Amino acid sequence: MRKTADIVIIGGGISGVTIGYFLLKHGAKNVVLLERDYLTAGATGRCGAGIRQQWGAPLNCRMSQFSCEFFENAQDELDYAHGIEFHQGGYLMLATTENELEQTRKNVALQNSLGIASKMLSPEETKEIVPLLDTKKILAAAYHHKDGHLNPFHTTQAFANAFKRLGGEIYINTNVTGITTTQGKISGVDTEHGHIATTIVVNAAGGYSQAVAALAGVDLPLHSERHNILVTEPVEPMLSAMLMSFSLNFYCQQVPHGSFIMGRTCPDQPNDLRITADSSFLEAMAKTITDVLPSLKNLRILRQWAGLYNMSPDKHPIYDQIPQLPGFYLAAGFSGHGFMMAPATGLSMAELILGLEPTLPWKQLGFNRFQSGELLLESSVV
Amino acid sequence: MRISEHPILDLKRSSPVKFTFDGTEISAFDNETIAVALHAAGIRTLSHSVNKHRPRGLYCAIGNCSSCVMIVDGEANVKTCITLVQDGMVVESQKGKGNLQ
Image 1 (tube, one colour):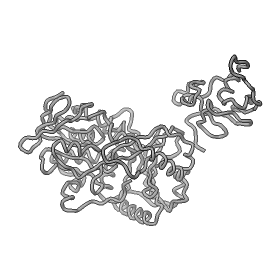
Image 2 (spheres, chains in turn purple, blue):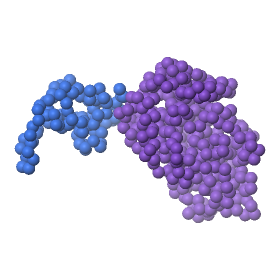
Image 3 (cartoon, helix red, strand yellow):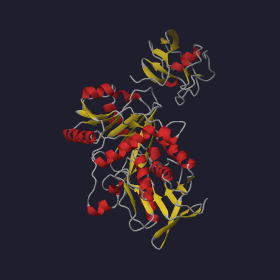
Image 4 (cartoon, rainbow over the protein chains, first blue to last red):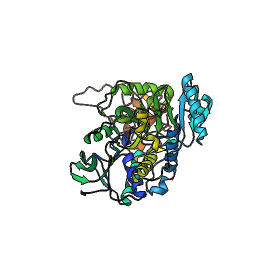
């Protein structure tokens, strides 16, 4: 294991590998990525993998627009033989209450003003896109044809390979046990396999970012929530669009392989970083989904698992340097949408760390907003 | 090929039933599974692998391996090794991963 590095990234999920890739692309040298388990072991490999530009806050719209365009061209940029399985089959957000309908209309108007071609659909038009759908509870839906879903494992590997081609080094099965400081500045990282001297550490540890920050004595305004998800046996393709509804509390997609992947938010989840499976989720999820897609009633569930949403006070990520500890950077608090925002995360963090001009409005995503109270509220998180 | 005598078990044949497999009529007994009745009728290929389309025969016979899935009365992905035959049942071999009704 190397003894020194210019920059050490902690976390081998999608955020860590994109940050590493963009840092090297923009001229950084000697960048090392440390992962406790294996790439995608955390929230990245556990996520629903939806990609959407349909948000209720302008900043999320901008970040996701950039990310979606990046994914469209990722094959060329990352040169990954297998492909990242970006399926742009559209994304439907189903509204079932008057309040939700009003909010959905506002969101679509905002998205349209930012150049996102989402639109409102009647229940009949929605059923044309998803013939399996039972529309009895649905008042209307918002739809964007360029949204969809993506394979998180291949996407992470594609970035990791590109990072390594540019000279980056990845150490998996390498737990960070300490972060060392000298005169109030970052001086290195202790791992179970040795010490790496560095002046810059990037905390991209997702659901564990608070625990990593605590190693340096930093208290973050973040907490992690356990979210459950399941996968079914594969069948022939029959659901092209991704489905989501806040009021019905679910999201669902069919991956290219044919399996359905679905999740919902469950009450009374532990807040101690446990990611054990929750049996009550299975029953609630089955009820929810068969109400909306009745033909799934005989589909077998293969397995379920859970992962962590890293929640910030305003459901927007934090991209910043820790004010009291120069050299300690944070990209966390994605609140359940870190995967789809990853290219924006990578570029923004590279620009922040290397002192480059912002391509995206990441300056709004600093710690300042918590002191000034200028929170960036987002209505569209499930 | 059916066992007609057993040293310990008393084999009482239940009433005969008929079902069709890909249009061909097959005779069975009503306490047999579909896969067993097909095996007794000499049918060895129950499905084909999804990617390379290689033939798949009776394998686990306890509902785990999915080697015997077929379309039964219109429903795809039925594990025929744990599904009992019924008189008049329409059994079809399945191509691909199956469609939901």
